[in-house]
Image 1: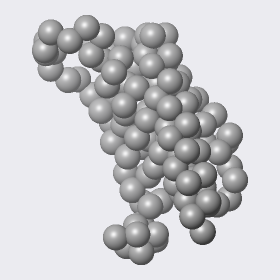
Image 2 (image 1 turned 90 degrees about the vertical axis):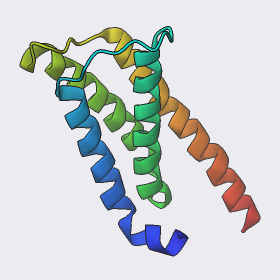
Image 3 (image 1 turned 30 degrees about the vertical axis):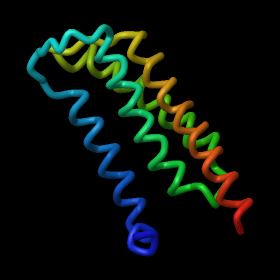
Length: 121
């Protein structure tokens, strides 16, 4: 599995990024599962996955800060686009905070896993 992912991780990261952008800009049906702030948790999880995918791509190139900044910037840009390009979505600074927390959580996880991987070598 690891060898299979090796050459395809950048394609996976691009696919995750494009999916996130598309899902952020299309009209989605409203639903209520009774979970408080569920959309913020979804934002956090989505950007957690996004950041991990790109951090894996650039792990050995030591470009973690660039990845984190780009992922957070993407979240900000998407919120602005939702507010300006669509009539059915709104930009929200709470979403930007949730996105950013997801990115930072992804960085934390990759740093913890990466440290353990390097120690085992």
